[in-house]
Length: 309
Image (cartoon, rainbow, N blue to C red):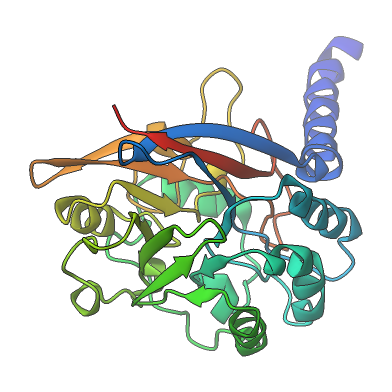
């Protein structure tokens, strides 16, 4: 009798322990990752860029708020927010409180689908199977019928009031305290078909010290367009690094058509005979209905931009 029930009970206990760890420990184990990216013109001194992504704030997430506030102590040269700040329509004040100290620095932002629309409750197993089978919407997924509207306008207005540059299908510039001019080109979220590359096409601006591309979801059509236009660095989020990964193997899904080998971190993208550096943030939050992370801790990234070879 013990042998008959021992194995199933052991598997159940192991599964429960993994879920407890994924929800109670790893999802709250915030980390800073540091990456060096050789993309600056010769003779330009290094710049430090703090990338924040996929905060997915839910009311009451005090530890996440305190951690985000503490990142201002890094004193970055500028901040890039790659979207999905919300996972709770009531959490706008908490997003702004958490990011308040970072708003003192030059910055720019794009929005993701969860800034505009609230998440829906879904069966996580079905979601994983759909994504593993390639049902991620290669051209993006329009908002579901009856999707809950999030009050994203309050975040936009506060970001704009602080001087951050909105890059949703737009170009903008940051003037850094050291005098450097950073040209930025951004797109609205391709995951819900809000990207309009034709409105920003044309490539980097020759009179800027550096040009960067910014988007929430790293769909291949967007990466191809930015790369063919010869942007040296593309910053994106959205993937959560896979969120539920297999130790020593990696991510099972990316939630877009990007390959799992590039689900997070720094990589290379090639298109049109050119090459760009791509950095995908694993983000620091989760959908409120799947508050789990496994083998993929929440993160922000401090990118040090250095002279290219």
